[in-house]
Amino acid sequence: MTGPRIGVVGATGAVGTITLELLAERGYDVRAFASARSAGTRLPFGDDEILVEEATAKVLSSSFRSPRLPVRSASTSRPPTASSTAIRSSCPR
Image (cartoon, rainbow, N blue to C red; front, side):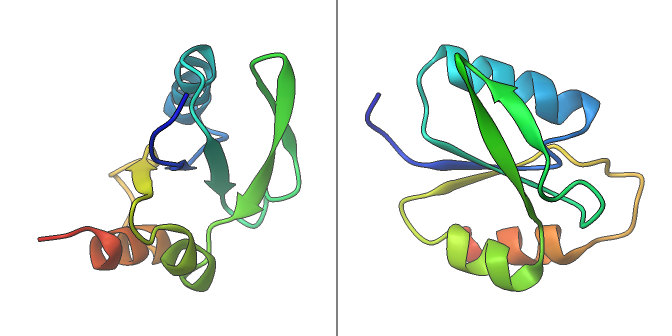
């Protein structure tokens, strides 16, 4: 499928894994991000796997430049993190 590359922040969580499943079914180009604890793991992605990258401000800021699309599936019950800062700074206002 053509379209934006989608970055899923919180990819190893409950919402993130479902998000990855749905995006794989639809053929999107995806990058998966999560905490340092989860970085380096591989998650099912369609007929393949996707490598989880650490969600640092530097990585996320460079990953979400136009025309890419960030999706934050991490819990909102936690204080803002590097992911929310990077996503806010990359989204047009």
